[in-house]
Amino acid sequence: MNGITIPSISCSRSSMTNIYDPYAATFEEGQGRINQLGGVFINGRPLPSYLRMRIIDMAIQGIRPCTISRQLRVSHGCVSKILSRYAETGSIESGSPNTVSKFKILPANIEQKVNEYKTIYSNNPIFVGEICERLIRDGVCTQSSLPSVNVLTRMLRGNQDDQSSIENKKNTNKTRRYRTSFNQDQVQRLEHTFQETYYPDVRVRKNLSSCIGVSEARIQIWFSNRRARSRKIASAHQQPPLATSTSSLEISSRPIAQSTINIPGSSMPLSGLHFNPNYLSSNANLSKVTTDPTFQPLNEFNNVLMNANNPTDLFLNQQSSRYPPHTNNYEYFYRSTATFPYLSSNISEPIFSPQTSSSSSFYIPNMLDAHSIYL
DNA sequence: GCCGTAACGGTTGAT
DNA sequence: ACATCAACCGTTACG
Image (cartoon, rainbow, N blue to C red; front, side, top):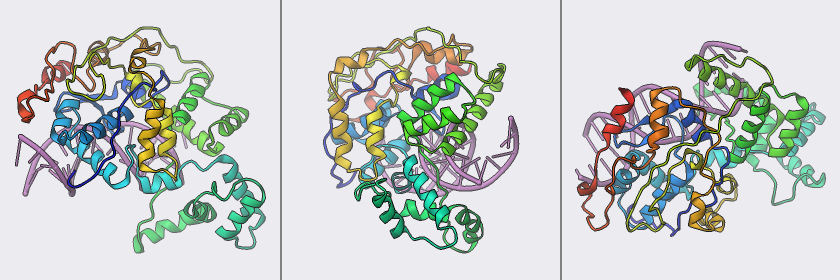
């Protein structure tokens, strides 16, 4: 973080209510792994928001990346990436800011209107400027809420662009594939619907579409992929796949075990902080902020602060009703020790001591935890 | 020992 | 439904 000024923040998870969390969900599905530092991670999935915030927060306090890495048990490469990203873009969230913030989540009503215009003008070319004009005239957007030119250009090109891009790729600059990034609130609602039915009908999809601002087509794709994922998980666990098309998933009320961490000198009251997968990356408001194309770096944390009420809120609603009984050793491990990303409960010493800023003195590898998984 | 980063394997939206 | 591609993830190892 050479010469980089980072705005000061105060990190809190107080606003992270017990909502659906994709990270926790994949964790539940047994996709967690142990890194060299003894921390748990899910390969391919981003770190939860609160951890990312914690990394930034610690860097602001002047704690070195290597220390952050060891203390949070996140690889130094990851810490480096997150700090670099934040320094360059001001975003603490995952996802490429260039593609994500500009392209993702075009409101369904705008997408629908643009498609209408395309149909109307199918014989004559229509330009982005005209579309902007019409969107405002038709009352779909205001000047300030207009989607970016990039989004509109992409929509205008549509499939034609996709087909030609295959050839263009070889000769010209590689065109990037558009990929929707659903925010937490959207995924939560999608998941909730998925719990009710694996095959939502048109009415449900349209209702969902207007509710979360994602086009029906995207919703259809999401359910298709979600079913595929469900089948994959079922086969991995050798459980019967989606047997009934509209059945609800069974959820038990088994609570999970908790562990604690004590980090002296921390800006947030981490003493006694409990880990619960339900808390991982659950700040819906944060997602809204960071997916906003008009995002300003400082506001990202301000919004978090606005939602931070009382540190004690962190420990409310910790009983999870979403965990079925663990079915294998790995599940037993992470549910009983719940080490991610901190210490397991069988280690009483704090891993970080501000009095000893020379790093290696407080690092206690916890590979026993990792080892026990693979026994 | 610390740090930046290429390579890697994984997840997941799109086709 | 399935296979595949592509974007992006965090970890790892190397310089």
